[in-house]
Image 1 (cartoon, rainbow over the protein chains, first blue to last red):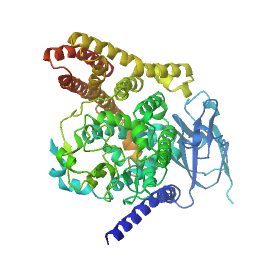
Image 2 (cartoon, rainbow over the protein chains, first blue to last red):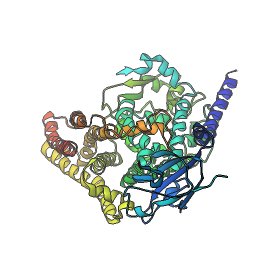
Image 3 (cartoon, chains in turn brown, red):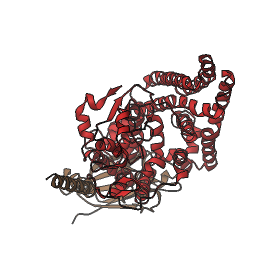
Image 4 (cartoon, chains in turn blue, purple):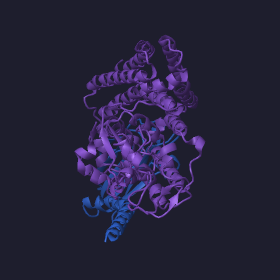
Length: 157
Length: 464
């Protein structure tokens, strides 16, 4: 009987470990990619935009910048961000390193300060079609001038 | 001394449960896994990433200010780093697998079970490892990925070593944290010791050390029957499980009860720890931007400064501080007028004076970590990865020092307490070295001056 209990405890202990190793990444992924987006109204377009400064260049990117890839990956510059007229858009603007700010002047959005390592959520309705400049509004580094791109609002179908 | 097992019987019942270490390691595995995940996939900004904030602010402060002085090496009981290696070595998480005897140790073990080379059976490698980490501390405490590399590397190394060498070889001889935990555990309020030496003498099996069907052999190669210091007892409590006579007690005792430094490796550990408390205080807390630029050489490009600073750190800890201490010991010997006491003996034995002061200096260093940077903890518990989460609604809690004006008023008594315990302990050590009380008092004069000068240096750094 004692041996059976010992084996049972060992079995539970083993599965508790497996549960942690497998379950934790799954829960994190579910929370970030399913639960959090479900808070926004249906049809909302969520755009994760990250400002990154490296020694010689600055860029906005739509790719995920993390502690691992920050140091070596060549990120794609988000020169154009496409949305459709009438879209509800949420910009989740990240700063991967220093204090930035974000603005879309012709939509009268911002400037909003984006602290290092923080995320600022900015909501807007794409009511007009056209091409609108977005940029960092704050002198963040020597390559600050590179931190600009365009939001392209195309006509709705 | 109070026997905590007698006072709180449930404590003994808990530590003798076969599932005990696993139960407290498991939550740490969970947190540690979360931290590594954050260190890899979270924001590269250190103060917004839980691995940096939790490990180098919260864990460090709790470890040095609470766990070590009050719990000895209780961190080693719950440390997740060597757990995977140990479980692989035992091929079980909670059970004992009796049946075999390898070099006298009972239990079935997976792996080669080789003994660690004799010439490395000391803490020199830990000293070197800690110094190397210290040189790169600027990265370690600001770049999440560096924390992942160091902590992840320790898991990999400890696991590989567990499969080659027997027991907790990594913890005993390589883990950089273990080295200073061992040194400062000498000051701790708790100690695991045998109760009645006669019971041990009449008992031939030495199961507490060699293991039995109830528990594993001591993973730390400590025979509790003869153990007189906390240094290398990892508080795994296997000996308590093994001892049929119930002859092992967990004592609650006065601070700084273990007073014996046994070799140059331990002496140099004391120098290194005190030297680094000074270096970190200058680099991380001081107003000198130039050192911060040198430490942060990848951003500032000041490689030469970094190399110079690293050399200065190593020289200070390995040569300058020991050299100054040697001069004072030489003076102490001359002043005592005792020709029988060897300089080497005095050098090693009196180096204990650096232990209580070193610990208190580290605690004093950790006070601003919590009081100035502690607010980051509140922020990162809601957004551990810097992904814009707000789990507990505190993600936007801005950085705010807690009672910053109080910091020096907490640091001053801590340093003075360190000075008091150091002088008191050295006096007690001296009583065993000098038979003549006058000689003892004379030998203490230079040591007191040395300790007073070190205290003034730290007071100057912290209070200005």
